[in-house]
Length: 140
Image (cartoon, rainbow, N blue to C red; front, side, top):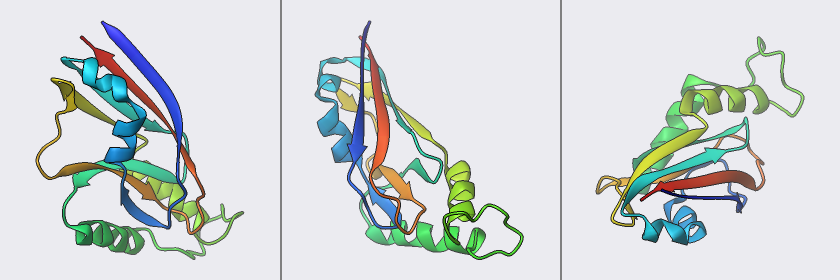
């Protein structure tokens, strides 16, 4: 059994859903040494999240952002936590809805994602800045 782990900073991105699969793979070249295993990506933030979905058509990512903004609107007067602006509490809710980590099988040194799957960084803040993720890979 081998175990690899590193923490990386993802470049700052605009609010929305962004493919980061290639960025994750570049950061973990050791993945190629594993015949079978698992890769976990964990985001160390409470106003951004991770998920896996469509990697080909960028309109899917736009539609995710549209849906999230309808489901969790900004400026709700019932929110008490708004220290950093109208997008503050909605970003925390969206992050909890989407989740802080993804877990993907590794087969023959590659992520065993479906044909149309990719890892998304879900940036829920208007100005979120760079985001830290911990990438862990283990297996044989």
